[in-house]
Structure formats: structure tokens, C-alpha cells
Amino acid sequence: MTADGDDDGFVSLAFSTSKILSGELHDVDKEVEYTVGTVKRGSTRLTTALREPGAGKEPTALIDWRARLFEISGHRKRVVEMKSTKGAFSSSRYWSWFDEEEYRVKYSAEMAHTWTLYSYTGDVLATLTSAVHRLLAQNSLPVLRIASTVTDEDERRFIVLVLLYSETKRLESVKERPISVVADLLEILPFPSASR
Image 1 (cartoon, rainbow, N blue to C red):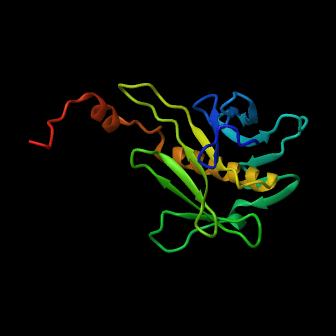
Image 2 (cartoon, rainbow, N blue to C red; image 1 turned 120 degrees about the vertical axis):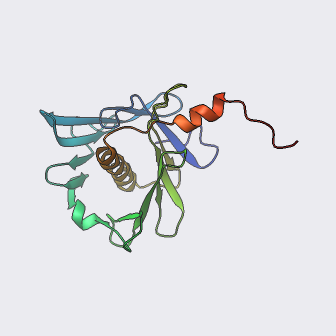
Image 3 (tube, one colour; image 1 turned 45 degrees about the vertical axis):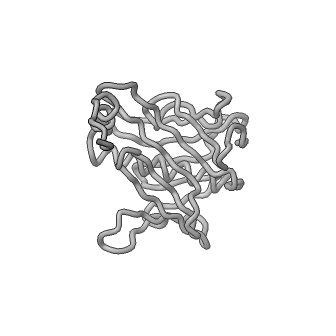
């Protein structure tokens, strides 16, 4: 992954479709960075594989939905071992793949529909903005942004899997994609000026 086109320290990867579990993630130059594919049996999701150009046919990272585990570069870990919460009322989730590091993941629906993944020091390492289906304006596709400081390939793969997993579970819980009616109305309705 290159830092081409990242003037704010992040590499932006756009999804080719609103379905984050099947499609391509490409950079600003339309170069494919990852391909995401999901195997289903009927309506049951079995696995979601992350593939990279030039890595061969085997996935470089995988979510096994039935076994509830991640596999990255041949190493497996169960979700229950990686994910935790702190405090009864916290909306943040904590994930760790590497023993010494913990990542905080939080979703914000306030107009942004964005997952943010923070490092254990509090720095933003990645964001995933959900597909937003609007009634009166053009729909938006999901966008994944990863800090260019994330240079370890396995760490990057882990971050991508965590965000894909988190968004998929969120969508399952609401049973529908976000519809931004308020944003549409704010764009088209004339409001009186407050400067009278």
C-alpha cells in the first residue's frame, strides 16, 4: 500500500460496491489494494477472505464467521480472545492481535457513519465510513482510510478485518443501512439567516 494521494497522513481506499464483504478496495489511482470475497451457504456467511494482488490464490487474511475467528498470515485467533469491552456503558470495543498492543474501536452515527480505530496511545490509525443511502442525494460508497504510519502488513490486515467485522455486525444489529434524511433536508431546505 502506497501513500499516493494522502496529504493528511492517511491512505484512502474506496470500496467498489456498497457491499463491504465482496468487492475491491482501490486507491486514488484506481489500483486494487485488496479484494474481499465471502463464501456463503444459502444465507449463512461462512468465510470472508482478504486477498492482495500478487499474493497468489490463498487469502492473506480471513474471517471465519462460524468458528468466530480471524486468520492472518496462517495464524489464527478466536474473536473472544481478541475483543473485549470496558465499563458497562462504553460503546467502545477493544481489540488486540499483538500481545502488547490494544486498539480501541468506536462507531459514530452523527452524520458521519464512521468507525474509528485508535492505537493504544490514542492516535487514529484507521477509519471506515459506511455506505450511506440517501433519499434525495447521491448514495456514497464505503471508504477505508489507514494511517500511512501503519507499515506492518499483518497489522494492516488485522485493522481491515476488525473494521469489516465491526461494520458487518453493526449492520446485522440494525437490519438496514443508514439513511441520511436529515443531511438531505439540510442540503435542500432554505433556512432563514440567523444574522437578522
